Length: 358
Image 1: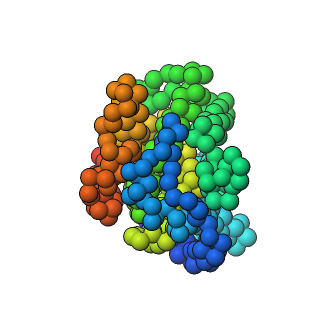
Image 2: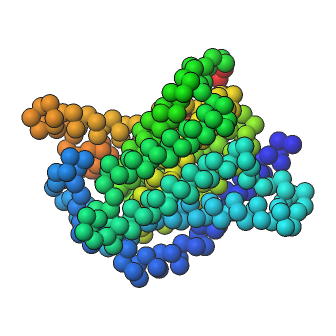
Image 3: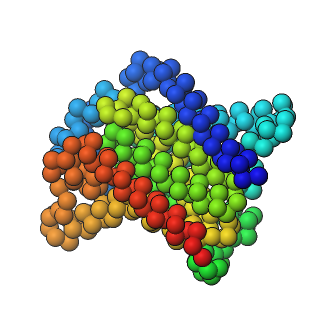
């Protein structure tokens, strides 16, 4: 039985990778042919001020490299999941039925958030590339994107609370922290927090490697909890990410951008909650450990903004988030990426070990 479960978990990941590799050439061709990149380099900080140092470092990468690369990730994961489901329904065999990972109690919800978040992110990417007027070269504002993420978080949090009867978060050794109806805004708050760490995208290969390690860690936790469909879903996402990374190793062929990061961050939150009380564990407690690179990204932004506000514009980092600070002090982009990958793997392993204790 354990061998069958292992095959069920890993086969969809391999299929997702193969699909991702196969669909990338036509998608990449479309993105380049239609010049789906920013027409002007540069960005603004959360306060609306220019970021000259960042813009100088990235002036050549900001243009002529397509956005929307995240399509590869969610489309390959969705296609692999749907293909296996289709075969299990219309060509049922013992093997095909066993491989089906689409289940109401484990994977409908994360699949919904992956596609929903990714489509909203795709809209933002399109507006950033093709937008006019208020959306010219900027897409949706941070406030609007956070509002979308918060709304999705409230909807999914309400589903956990009202439909799944979840109103607490888990602690080791079977203890729980009861939240009651406050579980819903707490869910939305965590979703927004993890999404805020999505700005880790911006260096070739960085975000892809980090997301792959985080979803792999939660796949291990779900497998340990015997949530086999959820474990398979996490790895089918990893398969899509790996196919994206194949083409994103420096120099990147395209950027993940919002259609990747929005769907992945929201879905990561959902998976963390599904491996919490619902799975008999404490997936939320280990989330800051497994997602440490995202947490450091968020904290560096908060520290930078706080310093500038209360210290007369003085900065702690040359550029925030902190991974761009390392670029600014002279680290090559590939060194930043590889060291972040190492940190991501170490803390993903640590989070996994903590999650299966008690």
